Image (cartoon, rainbow, N blue to C red; front, side, top):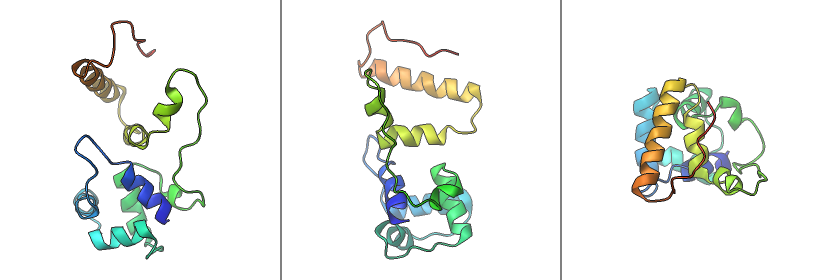
Length: 138
């Protein structure tokens, strides 16, 4: 449980760094209505507590965008290796990219396209792409 929770927390690092467990706990409580304290979330992430209630696991799953069965497995949060020669392997092994992908589950195609447009705009601003990058197939 600790490896899974700490892996999900690590995956939340953004441009301004990773939010603290107290911030994440407040966001979980605010978004799900299930009270989880920063201290308790830290205990789950460090292995000091390892038996959250079903309601708490449902809240964690909802917040992090994973299926509740994720917490039942025995394997730690580690990306499955992906084999490719075009940068896909390193992209898919990045916890931040995994979190973005997980959070898009259930969104409409229109919302996914809006997110893709935002990413493309960010890449232009940061001058990461030339004019010849491939567009995804629809």
